[in-house]
Image (cartoon, rainbow, N blue to C red):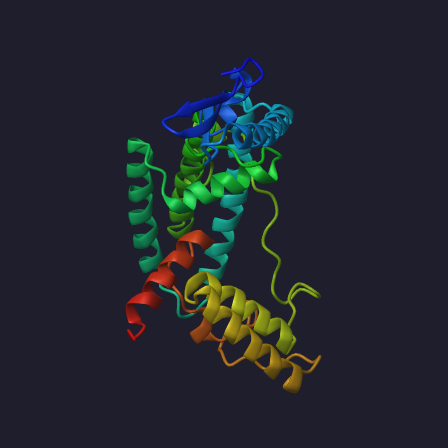
Length: 298
């Protein structure tokens, strides 16, 4: 091949673009080199396509080089941030359960303990479940790292850190449910020194909850999307409920059909859902599986 085509190779009758990624960005992409079929047997066509791919390749490399470096200290900082958010979320779940007359704390405790064992098994075998993978990916993207290759060592370390954070937050959650106040501080050394300040806003505080009919519809739909509804079902119900709210809504506070009206204005039947400790991704997958299992086949 001519010297002006250093990245152009041929296998059989087909031309390929082949170029190694710089060592500095190998950990941020999915492979050590790009080996791409140009889908042509024509040298002239292959050269044109090779130039296009080369430009895209160089642009991608420059973008990867500008990404922050994913060092061990950086990863630990990201995971600590995730843990604090997860801990706060678990504390909110405890308050929701204690305020729900239908919730069964014993059932919630058993479910959380079983889930801890499941996550510990995943951590021990370095098996990253889907919800942990999604959380790790979102954590990296919101921190300015973009889409890090799931096969990279950096991504795996972040995902394993997310697993550690979920396990520790759930451990504190179970201690909270049992009233073990001496167990409410982090024990995992990675999270040493982290504290959660403040308490969840009381639902009856002025301005803390939207008690209008439209607000209740929004809360109900958000809850059901996490627990029961598939995406298409959610869109249909949200549209219908919003139409009803527009027709019958009032800026005044409606009465709630529950003996306790403190949990986001939802009725008892709407709020009585187990496994509040699971992440939104976990609950969405469980809900979709249940929906698929109960839907009639056509």
